Amino acid sequence: MNRPYNILIYFILLCCYSTAIKGQSDTILDKEKLLELYQAQRYTEAASYLQTVYREDTEDQKEIAQMAYANMMAANLPIAEKYYMRLYGQQPGSLPVLFNLASISRRRGDDVKAKFYYKEIIKADSLNFNVYKQLAGMIEIPIDPEKIAYLKKANHLNATNPDVAFDLANSLNLSKRNDSAYTVIQTALIADTLNIMLLKAKLPICIALKKLDEAIFTGDKLMQSGDSSSYVLNNMGKAYFITKHYEKSLLMFKIIEEMGQKNESTLYYTALCYRELKNFPLATGYMKQAIQEAISPFISNYYKVLGEMYEKNSQIKNAAISYNKSLDYDNNGEVYYNLAVLNDHKLNDKKAALRFYNKFLLSKPDAEKYKAVIPYVKSRITAIR
Image (cartoon, rainbow, N blue to C red; front, top):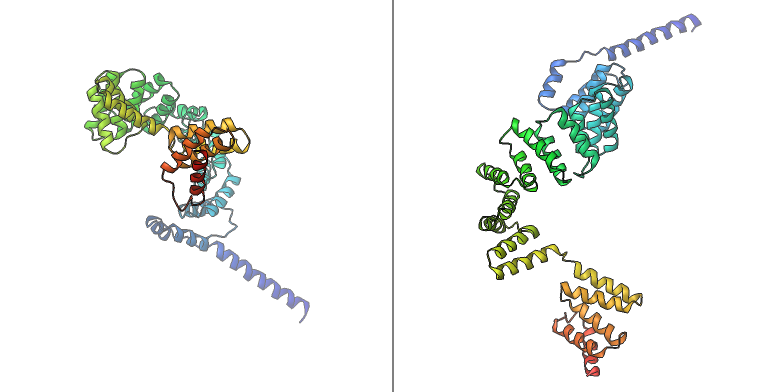
């Protein structure tokens, strides 16, 4: 085969290859089909379909945007991010691209990236309400100064948005800035006077500001709207108590108790109500319950373990103090045994040892668990006597 013929064959093959490539890139998008897939929310199929139409290395912004959107809606987040990052490289100031990158980052749990993209949006649009709202939502601690700053900016841009008003008022209330919190809530309520969420936020703020008649009025409005939650009843009970309507206050807290939602605070106020109503036996009983609720159920064991640590470190007096402190919260048989041995062998107080050995046996220790200990205790009681 001669040289000119070889060149001709090479040229023909090159043309065919170029035509094939061109044919692939010129595949016509069936817009109706794509729309049908979107309307049916079949985004995975839409993304797959677009891959058959567009080249992987396309530089066309519209094509990249379609691929990015379809994959994002199909929850193919790494792929969607890859396409949006290509758009970001071409148009770094695009607000839609930045918003979508921030959204994808949040959905993937990467708040650091999301915050970066939101701050990039602020550089281009410092009056973007949604960005400040999203940035505030990424900070979990309500009293964090940064969270409050973002909420204030969002609230300044849209003072009637109930979500932002609620969060800001709550943060200000927890930060003891109740005058400001009250202003935020009142402004938002002007636009929506029966917003349950805002009315609930208003309750503790009014109580903190001693606007007690307004607190009770707000609570009544909530209850008339069908909200008799423990949250509303608890705040109503506090407002009635401060205004010395003890029977009404007691009624609120007793309803909470009947709902099975009593806690340290409700038990405490119930005790105070009974005290003011001169029912001291019930007042005492409820105060004891409040104290019990306030104490960790594990505190007795904590003091026991602390005592064992002191004992192993030869801090015998501290060990005895910790063991006795443990008994203030629970009559634990093991602690009686520890104190008995401590007094018997290290403090040389046989009288105290005898008392604690007997208390250990009176606690009815598990025979199997303490099968080696019980005979020893009995032998020591006999020996000391």
